[in-house]
Length: 318
Ligand SMILES: Nc1ncnc2c1ncn2[C@@H]1O[C@H](COP(=O)(O)OP(=O)(O)OP(=O)(O)O)[C@@H](O)[C@H]1O
Figure 1 (tube, rainbow, N blue to C red):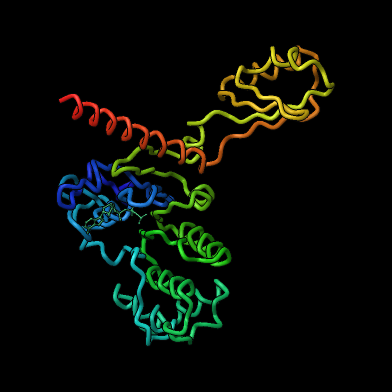
Figure 2: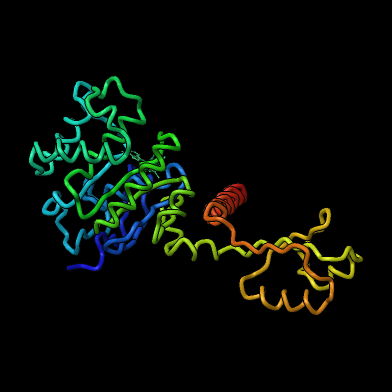
């Protein structure tokens, strides 16, 4: 048995001359919740599709549960594609059972599980409602349940949170955690950082077709310095306080704001203590995943802009 549910190695995909995915590698540990994060058009969907064998890569390989034949493990996978769609004439219960049956689940067991899932999520009131009468978000919840009703070992969800209201987003987070507790591996794409921050054991950031970061959420947040807000106990001469703070410190009202590297936190506290200015307020916080994500994507964009400027200069001087 492989330690990884998904191992993508050097996946590359061209659409015409455009390289939509460039040499993307990642490994999703069995039993983990893994987020593929990236801005619009970064290549997330194309990467997921290659990992699942829905489209062939131009280069690279994808292993599911250690094997190279995705078709042979189809029944062990639950997939919510980016394109949503169910038969509009079906009722929720039938739609879920139908999706389960496509993955080998007995019809009556599918109906039974549909009712259990819907009740657990507080959606039982719409179980016998036809899909065409449902809101888009509610139909998406039904499709989501349909994609996991056969209790797959690997659940792949493409932008599962988009289009859901906050209550349904919370229901989905609960479902993801519950499926992980059952032993499933969950791989999902998103550009909403809050969900990834709360749920993911590991993340990969894809921007401009390539993987730009891979690691834990804490490792991503540690890419940026800590944010500090310090208020001295006594109102003292600003120039005197500034001597024990980093040069980027800015004074506003009673407080000072600055950033500081992880390893400089204790020396800073020692300097403040030694200075005798006291502490009336002090908060030291890591930036959120959102900040780390924006930082990574901006760096990549800046590199592309610099290349484009360089090309323009070369062309102009040619
Ligand atoms: N079948 C296709 N033919 C041509 N170009 C495509 C095709 N599918 C995707 N692309 C392009 O490849 C790039 C990556 O698309 P992809 O859907 O993988 O990105 P994404 O990160 O999932 O984006 P989003 O968050 O907006 O869904 C985009 O520029 C897209 O326009």
